[in-house]
Each structure stands twice: as C-alpha cells, then as structure tokens.
Image (cartoon, rainbow, N blue to C red; front, side):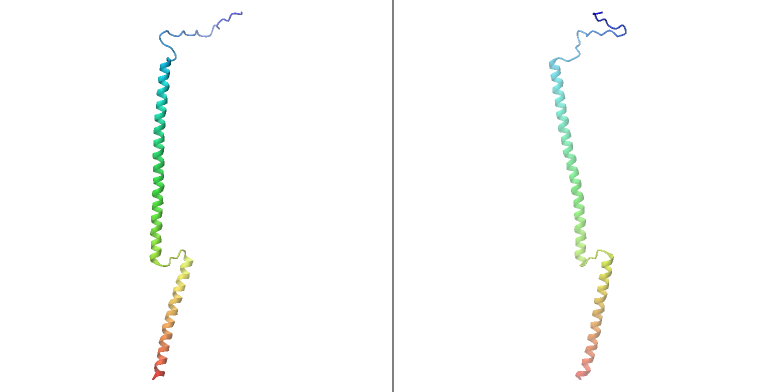
Length: 126
C-alpha cells in the first residue's frame, strides 16, 4: 500500500491539449497588462474629469443661491432705507404709532396755544 492508487470514484484528470496552453505566452501577458493599465488610466482620467465637472457645477449652484440671497438682501435694505424707519415686530409698531400720535397731539396743542396767545396779545396791544 505504499503506492498511491487513485480512488475509484474520482474522475480522471484531463490531459492538456498540445495546441492550447491555459496561460498566454509572455508577450500575451505583457499585452494584457499594458491594455489593462491603459484602460485603468483612461478610466481614471475620465472619472477625474467628471468629478471636476461635478464640483464646478455644485459650486456654481452654491454661487447662484448666494447671489439670490444677496439680491434679496439688497432689495430689502433699499426698501428699508427708502421708508425711513423700519419696524421689525408688532410691539415696536405699536410703540411707534403711539409716539407719532403723541407728537401730533403736541403739535396740535402748540397750534392751539399759539392761536390763544396771539388773540390775547392783539387786544392788549390796542
């Protein structure tokens, strides 16, 4: 039993054909390697270019958003500067209206006082 005998159930190993080798020759391997390297290089260049285009488009999109925000900001700032005082919330609006009414009342009282004062001085001068 020192000699090894193949198991009866195992299939026979096929013999390699003489005209066909399982592996390409050295020049074929070199051509395959060169082709694979060139394909990988061109794929890398293409992916790098596409990534650059994507980043550029993304930055342009952010730039457009910022431009829109800036335009809106300038528009509101111009409105505020043309309107004079700009009030932000309702509480401030109420305070501003009350102050305006008080100023109008003071002006009205000053006119009445001036009219009374001018009528009192007229008979005294005569």
